[in-house]
Length: 253
Figure (tube, rainbow, N blue to C red):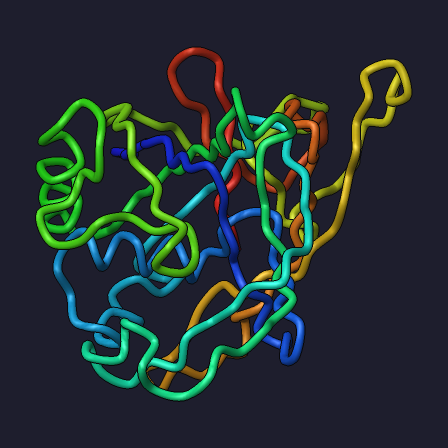
């Protein structure tokens, strides 16, 4: 199977948890729905028009955390904007909102760094993404809009890896995986020497899929195991993909 891969980087990010209200909390990695939005934006698709095309039955996505992260809460003065002319702050008062930010452990010298893998069953979409993502060695990688890791002021950039050949496999052994792991696919988690290696596991429930009315589908939420130290996770899983360079990933399902 053909798999596209790219790096997604920024100085800060905010992937708002859907249930946040007065305080905006963030997921630790971009949810599958956010990645679908980034891909649709690169392709120039209209807002809310792409949910079926990027559903889990049509598109496979995997995510890896490549640099260690931390979170901090900052109080932001947000503008009330309902039209372009309100961007100068002339419409309504500023709203102070406590907002949780993701950032590298050293914001002066480091960057947020996620790696994304994508496989779509439609060849035309794969070819279009390959062409757009590969149009520049470093930058936005989009003919339509800049890439944002959350809200508009969290601008980031893409570094395209390219198109590689992946092989779907199954194994009864404990293997090391580059990507985060859906908990429902884990058959065994290897915790040997975990204290020596400094693992920091967390579980997050991430949105995975919307229907055409922007409602979460029956399988639209998934529990994901993330290692915040950005080291590979050793486990036995129910199905994975082998990639060149002895890399292994698991699709978000």
